[in-house]
Amino acid sequence: MKTQICSNAQAAAKLTADIIARELRANPRLVLGLATGRTMEGVYRELVRLHAKEKLDFSRCKTFNLDEYVGLPSGDSQSYHFFMKERLFSRVNINLRSMHLPDGMSPDLDAECAAYEKKIKDAGGIDLQILGIGQNGHLGFNEPHSDFAARTHVQTLSLATRTQNAPLFPDPDAMPRRAITMGVGTIMEARQCLLLATGREKAGMVARAFQGPVTNSIPASVAQRHPRFTVILDADAAAEINSPAAAAA
Ligand code: GLP
Figure 1 (cartoon, helix red, strand yellow):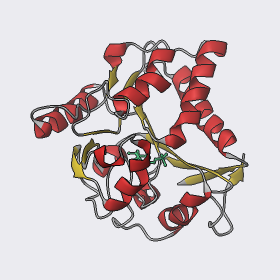
Figure 2 (figure 1 turned 180 degrees about the horizontal axis):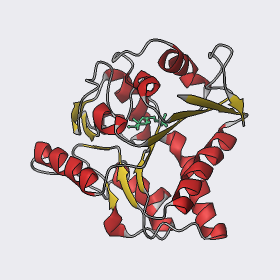
Figure 3 (figure 1 turned 90 degrees about the vertical axis):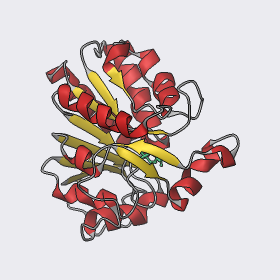
Figure 4 (figure 1 turned 180 degrees about the vertical axis):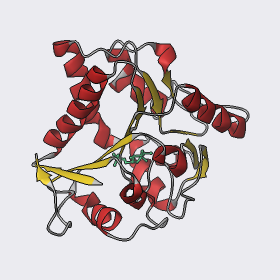
């Protein structure tokens, strides 16, 4: 695992976007795993800018998002389908048939999870997976005590996650209690992972996840076992890391 610390959140988002752009230029058919959440907004802004100003080409890549709430239609402004369309898909030249998110409205959620796994496999697996981290250490929506071998599945959301995300909903009580998420096992099969964390409120969890023991009570700690995993932090999120063996960027 490698750690890179940037002076602020904007620089950290830019570094993340630059790495994505570099990989996409090297392999225009890249299979890209995507994440949502407030932290990712700056990354997508920068990718949109690179598309507009430097013709970064998304036309041949495929994307797979980590997760989606159960019970929200894609047109719901709180769905991850909506987030991705607003922040990235409608702003770059991606082929709409090449982007994938789990369907949280499927009448058969288990079949949807199995089909999602098959789509990833049929695409040849994920080349580069982008990740955030929840304040409780969740990865995608893999909550504390998730099985490290888990595949895409329906996850009941913890109180901590609901508390973290409910303020984003106009009616916080309307936040779904379940989500479909790639499993930790699915995520760990990505050939390369990039995790971005910013802000002082993530600092304690960042230190525990990436400097403490690997434990499924902190799903993100599994990063330490991946052969090609980069954690990108801003100075605030890195505040509790001890003498980081990290390159300042
Ligand atoms: C959400 C997403 C995660 C994301 C995390 C952090 O619940 N399911 O994939 O990494 O929480 O969100 P934020 O960036 O808003 O802190």
